[in-house]
Image 1 (cartoon, rainbow, N blue to C red):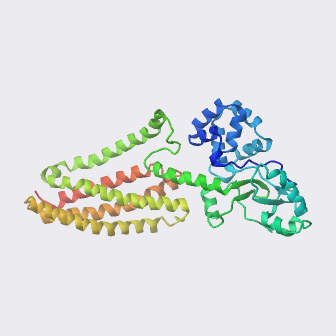
Image 2: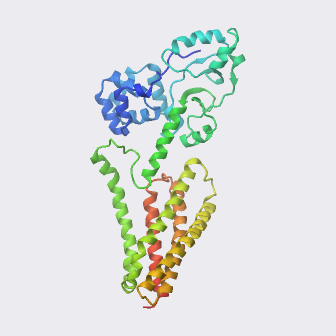
Image 3: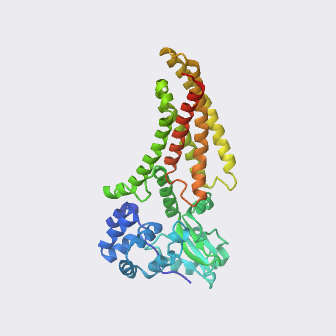
Length: 411
């Protein structure tokens, strides 16, 4: 048993112009470029890309173009593309490559070396995979084992038995956790029965996860992960504007709080000086909690049932940070009120300090609660979380300071 196909190893510096172009585009735009290219060039370019990206591009093509490109690609590649469509986006099965150098256990080292000679001319072969007649993966042989063992030795005598493998239905973040201490160039992918169904290169796996992590920063402020630097202005506007409109609505909520206490603000205009300070400090506290929580969800650090302890921790951190910054802001308000000869200088300082402590605590809880709630509801925990958290912190900080002022200061 052996495979005759091997995906060409592409030097990133020598990637074809078409592959370089589509690599920087979101799937729908990349598909439009691929459709305009010659089928042979399109098939060649797709083979140079991350398999997960290839599946996203193929899904955007119409059936005719997809069928034509598949007919031009090597049969094994086309078959693997078809096999990958059976798995959900974001899983290992969605980004598999065709197996390379799969031999039977009764093959000798010498026979394996001779079988490899034509393969290594067009591909970088890292491991030999040993599979039984039912295509179940039974072992793995490294190049070192081939080099230092006798040519007459059988592969089942020199192979590493029961090698580590991934399941095709495994999600990429979960695969990353399993491979974090296994920095292998490539990983075999086996189904529930142990049959070898594909390979995943370590570089492709880490490239995909790196993209997801970089996309989180944009997702938290409403920038779609499909948007790139090369995305046309009209498409970028379509991606961003809806979230900005949502942000506008939430901003009115914060404005509504100020309107409710307009009378207090008219009498204590001095409070307006500290409103942006309070909102900014509370907002940063919430965003810190949000960043840590999203990172924990991504890395699998936030386990089931850990929500209460995480929110408690962020609340206590908010209280501690709010106490320090609140004391400084309270002293600043007291000094400023004395300078303005305000008779309520002490109470103004107390109001600012209490509002800072309370709003920072609420911001910490919001930063942890929002992404966990989104995940529990089945949404991406990073999607526009920052907009929601910022609204919560603005409303709580402004409402708390103006409310306390209305309650404690008689003017």
